[in-house]
Length: 416
Ligand SMILES: [Ca+2]
Ligand SMILES: [Zn+2]
Image (tube, rainbow, N blue to C red; front, top):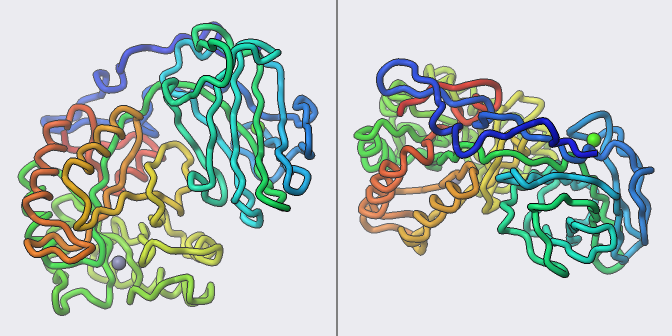
């Protein structure tokens, strides 16, 4: 059935213009940075509705994001499996089409997942889009696509006409049986784009060359501090961190001593996380002490267990991707790693792309200094980037990681 009939989406961009005001210089962002609900087109509630070829489709009653189950696909070893269903979906008013795909943590992820959206049940006219291994992380993956992202697979498809057939292909690697579950095919409006400036390790030049400059525009960043390093050598002092915190920055958790977590057992990983939180809390830096960046961006299944056990709120990994609300994989946030070989134009291009796609982009910096090492960036490029973001302020909202997380819980008030 057509789940969009009778529900009108409001266009264009009343999410940007209809923002509530709260005093001079403040704006209220809606929950999930969305001003209207996503519309469910297909809920994947019964594997019996899906015709499987070259594999088994079953009900996944333990992992789902809508209703009470998702549809799990497991191909015959090494084969390309398809599941298909006759539908009637109107995407004509959609700004984005969102896919939810669950990658079983125990599964090989050399697979590819290909979606086919057809205007005809015989696939005379259809679009296709392939999600590749590089797109996936374990757990739930949410992908927002623009209509222009789809590739014509055959004939002359159009989103102006209903989609009458959905087919999904789970393409196994050699001799593999990747377990991938499907749920929530939905459409909606673009979310409000956001940019999250993050700084790793807590270098003093992040105070002098980032904080002091960004303060001119009331743009707040997030600094992931290694708590054993506070007040030593090249690192920020506790007083600097407290000043940044009072100015709106998120002073967040980068473990106690920067040991790569995957080399530690689960209990020791917990100590790294909770120890850094306790150290920040003892300095009065409680606001973001449960928001984590993994040292060197790497983590494993034990890390995800340790994050939950220590009630951490977000975890930033090293995968180069943007993030979407709601319900992204909150302990596996992607980030864009800015190094000395990253040009200013590349970063402003990433900002522009996030605006077009309604995504949240986390920028990850190390030292900001005039003679940058391989992982660093220059003050001149950094200041030019902040200037650029400020000129785009009506189109993309600078947030701290803590504000971004709170937007997933309810509306959040930020500086204009
Ligand atoms: Ca479902
Ligand atoms: Zn680090």
